[in-house]
Each structure stands twice: as C-alpha cells, then as structure tokens.
Image (tube, rainbow, N blue to C red; front, top):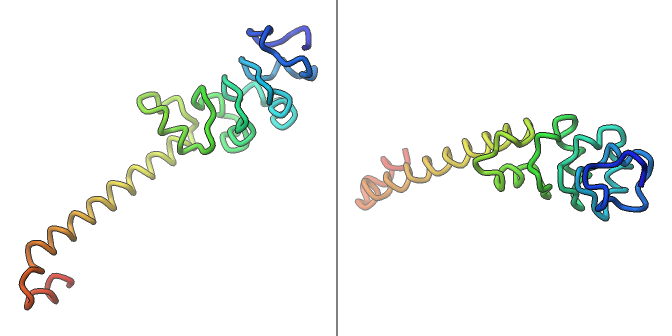
Length: 133
C-alpha cells in the first residue's frame, strides 16, 4: 500500500495504487476497481467497499459520501435499508424514495377506492355501469 492510506491501513489491499489514499475507509478485494473507476472522487465512495461500489459511485456522483455505509445493488434499495437514516442517503436516492413512497400510497389508495366502489355498488347488477363510471 501507499504510505498515506486509509485509517484501517492493515485491511488495505497490497495491490492498491498510489491513489489508495482516496479509497474507501475499509479496503476490500475490490479496492483496486474502486480506485481505478472513481479516480479522484473515490474518497466519496461508501465507507464499506463492495462489488457494487462502482455502481454506487456512478449513480451518486459527488454526493456518494452521503450514501449508506454498505453499498447495495441499487440506490433505491440503499434507501430502503437505511430506513430511519434515509437522510444519510444520496440526494438522488432520497428523491427516488420519496417518489416511490408517493406512488406506492397513490396506487394503494386508488386500489382501496375501487374495492370500496365494487363492494358498495357493484353487488347489484343494475348499478354496475354506474360503478364503473
């Protein structure tokens, strides 16, 4: 490893390049991939490296430092596993989560609306047309 490494220098990979100082705080087997893809912005990667750290960097851009500590396959999943700490997710992640939650409740509300309509007025055959209107 280079002379200036992350705080957990013992866990650093021996094949790290000289830019390992910009690597994740906990190095892993994919730290080389992390360093080579993220280049100078690799310091903004998630604190725990994973095989999807490249995806994390490419989607979150410069705000990837705000991602969950454990990278996941998608940013939306990242928001899900953060739960109460969703504020620490990337800005694009929180926005996506907000949209997803909004759409989820929107469709649930619509579904319940039509179920109630069906129960209340579609049980009588002559009101079927009125119900679907």
